[in-house]
Image (cartoon, rainbow, N blue to C red; front, side, top):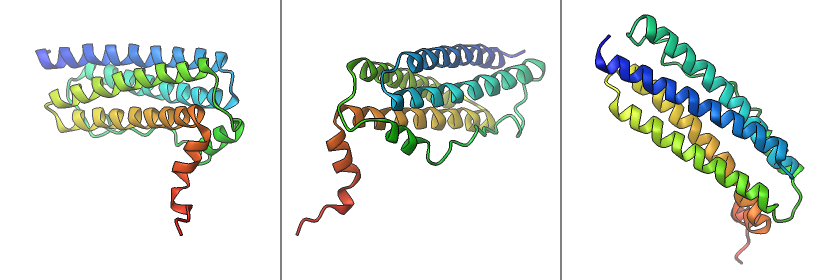
Length: 175
């Protein structure tokens, strides 16, 4: 096996560990959350991490047998989130500033997602196979979606009135 193939296997092991750490954190954060909305966000993200772990493990196992990337390997189809998921989490929140512990937990989640984004972006830059790059960029996109969920909810908890104002700006009458 060539050096590049050994490196990607090592990187995939690191990715699996990162995703397992993320799932463990999100499960614990959901358990400790004071807000039902925060609990829902973390529970949703933990489910996403399970798919990431399974998919990365499948890729690892396939590359261990044959270091050639196939079209099937670069597919990344996480379970579709319910379109109303974020709205449901918002509905569970109260129109009041969030608990400091929940805000801190969201900040930690944001930091973890940012590290994942940077890790996968770095791997994608190094990828020599377009299929490998496409898979890694799919992971970047997925982690970025997690980041945006966390950031949006954090912004809501930090200042609900401001969050609503920004979200509803298209409806502000300046006249």
